[in-house]
Each structure stands twice: as structure tokens, then as C-alpha cells.
Image (cartoon, rainbow, N blue to C red):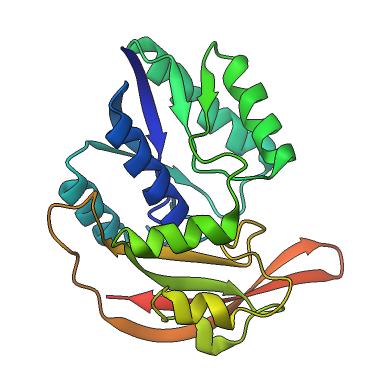
Length: 227
């Protein structure tokens, strides 16, 4: 049986893909791998506190390995850090890395090229699935997730802190992918068939953060604090 690491974001696509892999039972997942901000100890792009990530791993029943990345890291620095992680995985007899990506061709190509450079291969369990069908299957399977960050140019503040259900899916503005695959929103899963117990979360304050994309261009995101 091939050994793999699972790139875990704590969100819905990551959870659904993991569920499918565990159900099939033909891959031995050695551990979950998650990148966090070294400054804030929160999941990258999701803003979820480290201790909630640890509760997810505990209730899934898989070991968790964390990679801490500086928020101002260049792509070169990021690649160097992740290459070190992939070499560590390879030294443990691991041959594959699993992702919950759905349709971003450039992202998949980038991941596969980085993995190939250290002799690993990528696995994409939900690749090319219809995103509307996928998110509805996610809800119907009993998963529960809350939106923790949202692109402020596409979604207003009210979407942060909402539980993903059929009503929320139906209320997404035109042009927003139902799974947020283009980065429209990110989520935190607190219950579902992969967990031994639900995770208790309280919705805190929602704030806006700006990120510099390029000279003169900023990206704005709403972040909902979970406690």
C-alpha cells in the first residue's frame, strides 16, 4: 500500500477529499501536513487558531505535522521550506502527497513540478468534480463547516461566520464558485463523518485585512475569529 501525506487546510474541500480517501482505504496516510503563520500561529489564508487545528487532527485520529511560514516569505523562500518538508517525507518512505484541489490547472501543475523535483507524486481525489454538486454532497454527508475568511471584493461581511448549508450555497452571488475554489472564501470544518467528536467553536469578531498583491493593488479579506 502506498504511503502518503495529506495536505490539510482544515476546510471543506480538504475534509471531503480526506473522507473519500479514507473510505477507499487503499492509501496509508502517515500524517496531516498544515502550514501556519509563524507570526500568528494560525492556518495560512484561513486564520484559524492552532489549537483548533490540533483538535481537528485529534478527532480525525491522524498525526499532525506543522510547517510555520513567515507571512512576508517570498515564493522562493516558501518553496525552499516545502522542499525540505517533502524531503523529510521521502526519508520516511512516503511516496505521495494528497491535495483537495478541484480545478485550478496552474496550481496542480505547480504542485506536481515541486513534488517531482524531490521524487514524490501528487494525488488529487476530487479533481474535476462539479463544485456545486461537490459542496451539496458535503452538506448531505453530514459535514458542518463555517466560513472563516472571504474575499471582500466578492462577498460582504455577513458571509463570515455563517455555516455552510444549502441556504448559504443558494445565496452566493453570481460568479462566486460554490466551493470557493478561486479563493473567494475559506472554511473550517467542525463536524462530519471523519471526526470522532464535533469540535466546539464560538464565533468571534470579524475584521478586514489587506494584502499587497502588487504595486498599487491590494487584496482585501474578511476574517472571522473562531474561539
